[in-house]
Amino acid sequence: MLPFTPEQFFTVFAAYNQAIWPAQIVAYGLGLIAVGAIFRAGPATGRAATVVLAAMWLWTGIAYHGLFFAPINKAAFGFGALFVVQGVAIAIVGLARNGLRFGFGSSPAAWLGWIFILYAAVAYPLLGMATGHAYPAMPMFGVTPCPVTIFTFGMLLLTTKPFSRWLLVIPFLWSLIGGSAAILLGVPQDWVLLVSGIVAVPLILLRHRATNSALQAD
Image 1 (cartoon, one colour):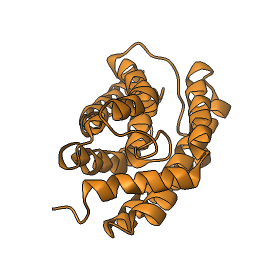
Image 2 (cartoon, helix red, strand yellow; image 1 turned 135 degrees about the vertical axis):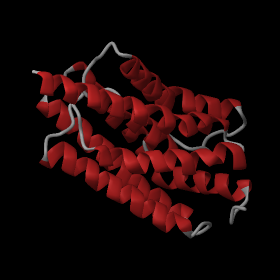
Image 3 (cartoon, one colour; image 1 turned 45 degrees about the vertical axis):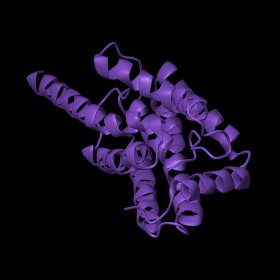
């Protein structure tokens, strides 16, 4: 049983989107920078994409969970803390350790990564509007938890070398927690979130294992 109603849930989105405008447009611009790292692979672009992903998680944890969602759900303080931890972890792995590189690939994992990226940025809001959740009472790309998580899985599926497995833990947990909204709150666009962690995490771990095995063989 949730401590809030669907009406309260979507009212939070409406108040949040109105309060942070035009951060939604900035988020799309940052998303383009992150995707650009895939087209121009290298250390500098990898760090740029890292900054974008870290900023999305930090912003969402503090602004959405901490300031707007917490008044109707005290668990949001815990969710916000997890998002901040994830943002810091991404920054450490991608910046301090230079551990995140992005690029094209022909594997099924890479194609799934593109599907997740396009879904989070384009299909997610369109599906929301088509099912009766018009702006501003809807989750938006880059500034709300579920699209951020799907976009992150998409980017991580397009990495070109193994990275710390710990970066997968919190997105996977949120894919289950946030994905439950698809059932409990009538948010059909979050069905993909529910599936994203279950599919993406094994694919990434299998790719890491294959890469490490190839390196050991050499």
